Image (cartoon, rainbow, N blue to C red; front, side, top):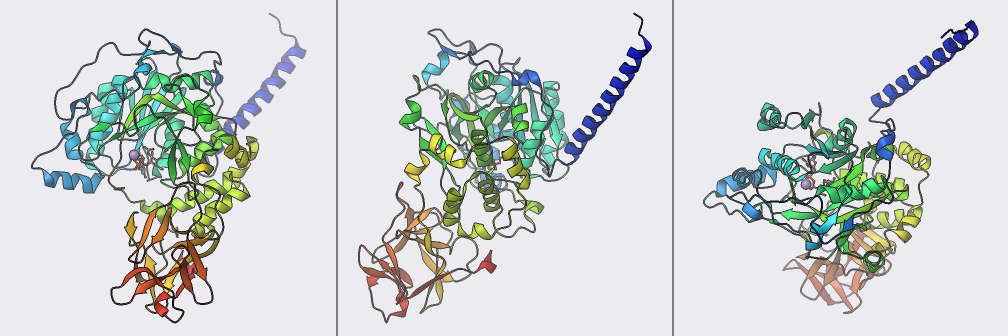
Length: 584
Ligand code: UD2
Ligand code: MN
């Protein structure tokens, strides 16, 4: 075909415009990649992974589900069928393992990688038929100094119990571990899977939150599933998680978590059989669960169907990869551990998506005895608790003024913590045209108020100091129910941080202070109440228990606390409640 000069000129002009545009796109792309720390992660859109199939619902039939495995191989040996493995005469090994890993790795080392675990699902789950063209999936496992056998059992169970054509890859992201056997040894071990399991390593410690965002960027499946590095997935766990996302790419799904004992590796359900729970929170941003309220369960014919949940625990979930990146992945300003589950939950709900918990997908998780790792350099230069700083970023981004106050009432020191810059997060919220927090509370998290009502303001908060002794009330680091004692006043941390609210509740952390003539205790607050029996008498500095009409007294000799008849001259009954900003 002949091209005239005029057309050729036009073609040249068009192609140079195209070239400039391409260069611009490339530069912008590179710029945004280089600025990953400061910028939300927004990568190119990929049309295919955005396609929803609104009419393709799973179907419950009388014949066995289309993804149910036909046969089940039982591996003999310790821990088989998820039974507890009691190691005899190896107390030292157990103690060593637990102090290093927070779990009994010595036991895990003896248990087969492919042991079977009890099928904890409702029987009905076996009869659901799922769409056949479910999206390709990358399972992302981030880890920092995990036990080798526990990490590898997570991988083995995913490989063994996922449909091979749907499981696109497993991406292991090493968050700068320094344990010998997680080095070359690991590279070698995963070769058996011929590239299906990939390992990438951070060149410095990033914390689990940023490491997960990195995993999402590196993954190449349409859907990403995050798992902690100490899990065992249960039978047919994946298709039920993918089906809602296939129907609507803005649904994030969460499996029901079973417990794996950190000492015996016994696999057992956490919840009562057949009862569905969902994720909520209290005003100090501790994660809580609540039985699914009627308003939600009434929408479903079967207990085995997915249902809506305001939040999730954090560790295990599935989401469309491009969607996750489009909504900014995790706020890159969140550090190491904590609060990211709320950030993602609020963001998804407020910006047009939703979260569903899936009863037919079960995954076991080892709840450790304690957190075995430090936050390393990442916590340096941060005064105050890093986790509370994360919470503050999240609530300052997603809450409205009314609800922010409840957080600061419950966690008064948070007001003084430096949360860094959230301009980018607020801009993202604007750009995605996200809804108000009050919409979320009224339409999604409506059951929070039943358990954790709106909080009355504090009239006093801080150290509770006794005039006669100069000592302060102190929880002594114990968890409720426990006696409250006294110690020298320091006001740092949470053990001496008490709050008295307008309705008479005296609180410490999420607990309530109760008293009788013999003792002062921290107890679990009655759910649904925010009031209490206490009154502060300004004139005589007394803390009066209104029910008994008695005053809080430090019994001078025994050094115990309790209630006694009020006497305005007794300095062992005089208390001041004060706080000093310099302490945080
Ligand atoms: C829960 C979540 C966890 C995470 C956390 C809050 C579940 C079952 N677990 O605590 O996934 O959301 O709450 O942030 O919901 N890790 C790193 N780098 C670090 C620290 C941890 O890669 O600096 C890894 C770690 O090896 C593990 C994962 O992150 O695979 C989660 O850490 P965890 O198991 O200590 O958290 P967990 O279960 O106590
Ligand atoms: Mn975990």
